[in-house]
Length: 113
Length: 113
Image 1 (cartoon, rainbow over the protein chains, first blue to last red):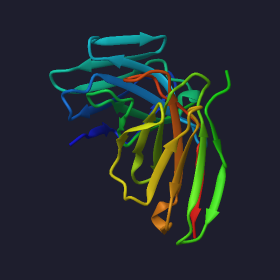
Image 2: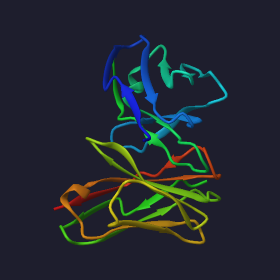
Image 3: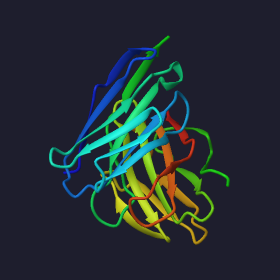
């Protein structure tokens, strides 16, 4: 069935270091992979997304890579700042005419000043 | 544009009761999805509506139902509430038919006593 695994569940880094979060999906028909950031008590917000016809996408300090063969995708945050502290969710959209997303279980990122 | 609006923000019910949650999507968005968020299970897909039609349904019992109106506003209903239904219920809207960016509301925090 449809499944997205996310690792690690918690990640602590020093301010200025890089952070990497990895996800694996099971449905080979998946073709859309967004990442959401959720601060405590707030709604999830889209920070970056990638489609299956692209291998990498960057937006300032954030980048996402996709390996369709291995069914892996990763979020990279460089030069981390305390305001990056939040829970990050990866997701995959199954094939077909849908906006449905299957979410990973989340990564709690703590950036230590 | 106003964002996705969910009402009420908080709700306290007792076991056996039923509850109706409301979601107003971003103006012009025709797709509305509902997710249940709990600390242990993350974000679980409930159902998706597009132009008043349910396109997808997640693995939840029949006590969970929803509908979408001609103005794209959506409601979800949970009947015969159980303690395990306590969760944050998030609504998300998107503009198009498939693999579109989801924009989340702030959610309705439901507590079942």
